Length: 168
Image (cartoon, rainbow, N blue to C red):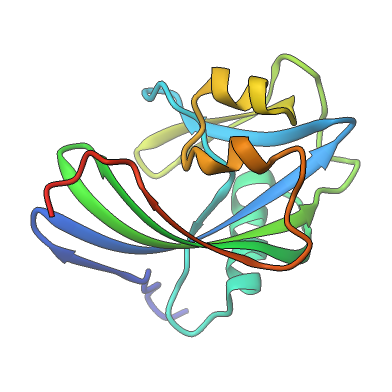
């Protein structure tokens, strides 16, 4: 097996990422995850690797993180995302897809349903009500998704999102 090559560029103190994420829904809830040492949550996914399509990235990441094969649906957003994280300025290109998570993956409307060790991070996954109020309360960047969660775009939308904390 060849060495994995994530698509990112480090130019300290900045970093570029190419991230693919999925929004999976069940019973009026959407799946989210976080590293347990962080306060904020996000949508599951990960960095693309050189030589794989974005759909392949999302399928690979969900097998690695959830242990199930997902069905990838339509693209919702392409996002030019600018944010600050761990004392670094990030420029991230994000592709966000609808995805269908098999019924075999656990569901609970409140509790954490899945945990795993991913490198140095302990990740936890839970379902949260797919509403603007619930996503806003939980703190899920990029924050425009909370505004659109109850009325997802029918065709892919391009978003430029800047959390306003960057020194550019």
